[in-house]
Length: 168
Image 1 (cartoon, helix red, strand yellow):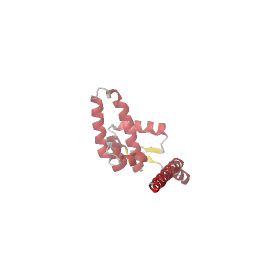
Image 2 (cartoon, one colour):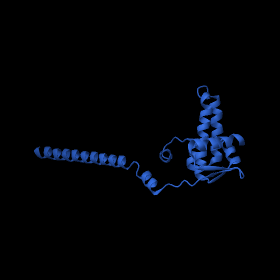
Image 3 (cartoon, one colour):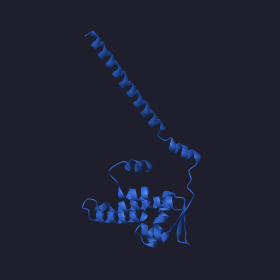
Image 4 (cartoon, one colour):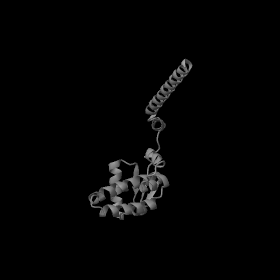
């Protein structure tokens, strides 16, 4: 997702939901955009049957991003952001915690979700930083080889041109 956000910052195309959630972290605006998407999808002839699937995946996306920003989340406010009632919100989160194996607990007394500490180990941090290092290094070697090859060809062309000028 980090790579997608970085790439999209340099493009003319913007995805309003990704922009709201991953760049601005504006969950209120994202909620509005999700409501707009639901209305558009529900009225679209070709996509109307996919509205429920889209909304479910969008809710998971919003929840994941919201959890990255907040440690303790009120169920009522989360239900509003996900456009769901309280009972449905709690049931949905319990299923999500079970199925996705999230490190989270529901505090019934305070009616909130408490996220566990999700700190990456040093090993995981190093692996993330160096994930594509081999590919990038190989690409750099290929680019350098191409550059040197072009430089040699240019040098040979200049030498031939100089020899031809000397012959005349």
